[in-house]
Image (cartoon, rainbow, N blue to C red; front, top):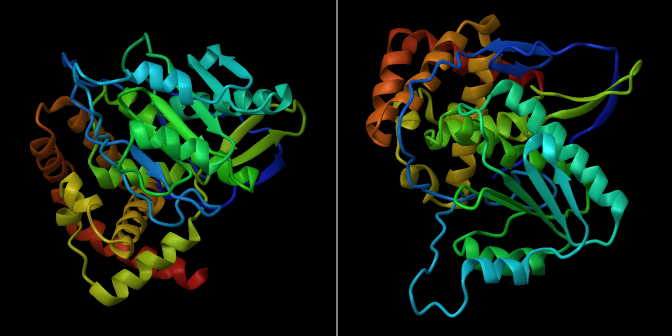
Length: 355
């Protein structure tokens, strides 16, 4: 979906990551999240395929979580699998057994495939430390990297026909992360992190679908991850928690023009109300989502992390999506809503002034 700052490659002193059962990693620290989710039989029908917009940053342009409108009938001339076999990248394929994934590239370039095999393994490893899958056996995933817009759009036209111009999207039905190469290596990595977050979060929630603001807020939060390398061992990791400057400015402008913001109304809106809007409004929705997630994780020395933990547990447990969103939000945030709204708005304005 929307995107982020370019990912930098840095070297850092060794800093071990605390691998608690579910740790939300932020700015070099960890946030414990309960993994004791209520077992629930069955899965929901996926409401959308989520996208990442183009122009160098994973969330630039118009991001749009899109509902895949797939034609499936007895008279269909070509099956989905036939279309996939015909249109998927046909270059070097790299297995990622540690992530139960495979990377399909269009290049006959072993080095390129190995780079993205390693980055896929790293992204899944780091994100699953934060959001461990609820089921022991995780279904396989596929990462498709197209070399150009033409191949990417031909594939998206069939499997995500409402997809707006983008650098990538996540298809929860096929468990595919579909991406187009960018002029900048950092932008492709940001897209990989963003779409991987959507997949990993759903596995963490037992194939439940989070509200749009949380889904996109977390994805834009984690897409700003910075590749770091231990200067002693050479081991790679990802440092999360970078500020998304564009979204920070957008959130601050929105608060200046519309304060106070009704956070409850925003956080409990349905998917259509969040996504089926104009470009500028959608970008504001992403900016507000990112800023709310950032504040939940980092604001006031982690004061609201317990609310986020409980919120995720409630989302995973309740049977009906919209009832779940409203009930879960009220249960977790109503007792602290006044102080949370004031603190969040104050943080946004203060952080924007510093920026």
